Amino acid sequence: MTANIRVTVWNEFRHERQSQEVAKIYPEGIHGTIARALGNDGLTVRTATLDEPEHGLTDEVLNNTDVLIWWGHMAHAEVRDEIVDKVHKRVLDGMGLIVLHSGHFSKIFKRLLGTDCDLKWRESNDKERLWVVTPGHPITEGIGEYIELEHEEMYGEPFGIPTPDELVFVSWFTGGEIFRSGCCYTRGQGKIFYFRPGHETIPTYHNPEIQQVIRNAVHWAAPTATRKLIRGNTQPVNK
Image 1: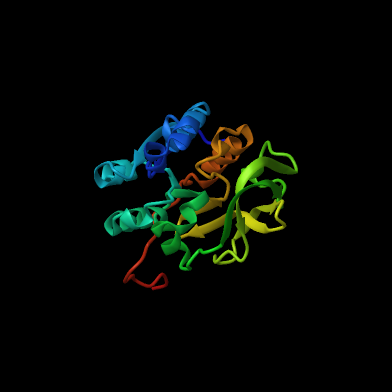
Image 2 (image 1 turned 60 degrees about the vertical axis):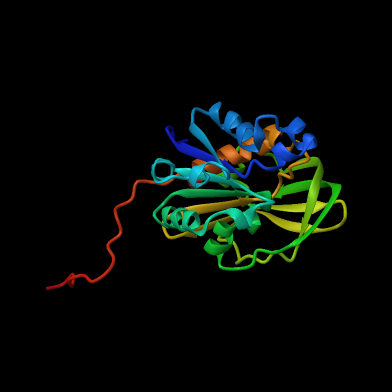
């Protein structure tokens, strides 16, 4: 796996400050828990949150981020459009983006995918079984046939997304629903991975297999060395 990948973990950091239940599960914030897990993999990791200046995503931070991880839920509308513009450009230029759980409704994810990204949902602590449907994919390295989560929020189809370039996980819930839970896309030169589990009142991000998937996704989404694209008015190749 590639070393020296620079990761920024972005989180609203609202639930953890407003709910004792969530704070008890994630005393460092969801971003802190994910960052600590990734730091054990030798990655260079920083965090950013909604209420920091420029949402923590300054030009300096974005220009020094290879992979951005995004968790949002209750404050999608508060993310400033000019910050979304900057993140969007960085993804098209090659920065990887990993969107977690309710980040499906984030401005950046909807803009990159061009759809409403809506779905069914239910908070009832269903059991979730995430089946690996693309064995051998780098994101599934170290994972068996499935990951089982005893309790999770249910997301169900239809999921208003474009057909994924690659579908890595499909979830089944005890309520009978299924869901496309691990979706890969390419936009411009950037790779995008959507990963479904991670409701804030459940300790999903403490699960070693979930952490493994996120680590794998970081390595998969990291930009590769490519030549700068030539665009705009150009001279003919043949004289």
